[in-house]
Image 1 (cartoon, rainbow, N blue to C red):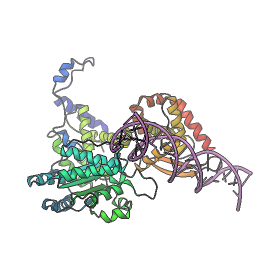
Image 2 (cartoon, rainbow, N blue to C red):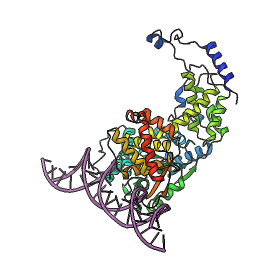
Image 3 (cartoon, protein in one colour):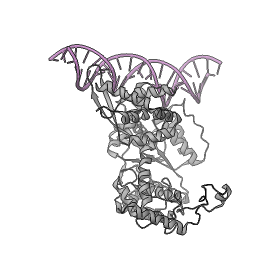
Image 4 (cartoon, rainbow, N blue to C red):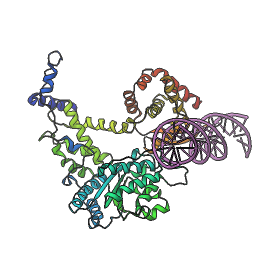
Length: 467
DNA sequence: ACTCCACTGGAAATGAAGGCAG
DNA sequence: CTGCCTTCATTTCCAGTGGAGT
């Protein structure tokens, strides 16, 4: 790649050449007037930014490279229009390969066509990432369905058995609909609520109840499910035999995009930008960056979006390669801190403690032993006068983050008087994570300002274990 | 080879928040 | 109001483990 010099020269040139709104803060850095600022036309490289919004469903002609999958899904759902219940589906493949895009677009159209024929179909989509138990899943499905149907929803969240929540859900279907399609995104993360290891995961029960609704609740084949997952094999493995016999889905595989396909995908969203604001290399470069990862189209689009935003921030009239490079690092950081951002303060504190452990450790112990992280967590909680959770609780949190792949873990024995420890290894840059956490909460910022103290706390914990 | 200790991991218990029926 | 139900987050309890010391 070329060095920075010429690139920034070009940038400056362009800015002076076109810069219609070169702001009047030149003289002494003061802004002329706030009203003037508002009156001034907004400078942006975007024409229709919503095209780059990740959850926004786009027209079918913007879908690229998924013809096979698109046709399978259509073929699968088509019988619904002849009042023949469609079979269940499982769409699997890595994230950002178009699973929810395809199912979303196809079901949208299906509902429209069905409406014209006077046939009532509802689609209820549930992302299971933040849902912990079967009970919560049923509750949310019922709530979403009620909203979809525009009927009042008066089901209590607690104090009512899961069975009754199912009944409520089935009642809604029975009363209002000919067919309901449940789209269960990332279903494999719905494992919680297990009492013992012998019991099957929550999603197994959920699938059982949804697929057997016809028998259980006397519905007439009015329910079909579409499961979206990264890993179909492990999901199917978690099913108990009962569910396995009632849930026999048609599998549709979504594989990675290569750089070439990503480029085409991005070109189809090009009109999110004004004409001619994208430098020629921007799209190929963005596609290449995204292809280096997992061929994730969502990430590619995020990168392009972010490059545009950076250009706007700099009030640059065009999007340059340099903006792409900046976007690359920005999005990388963004992705690594995302699951932490809306964690509770308790969890944040624990992750923060773990990050401090990783960063301050000066022994040759690898990773972060859970017990040490917990001790540091307690110290932080004490110094900020916060509630503390027990070791067994923080262990559960650690394990959650292992399944989220923020950490990997490994246990090591330290022998007499030291016990065995589970070590957690950051899979994302702990420095970024610390920065994110420091900015997100005042209490953690306090701790950060007191870093000498906590550095010593971390070190003495490690030294004890290392000696 | 055996001992012993602190930690692990999983089950059971507890408690909070909420709801229902009589 | 009372008694009994639900879910869910959390704590308490305890057998199991791994490897340094003896």
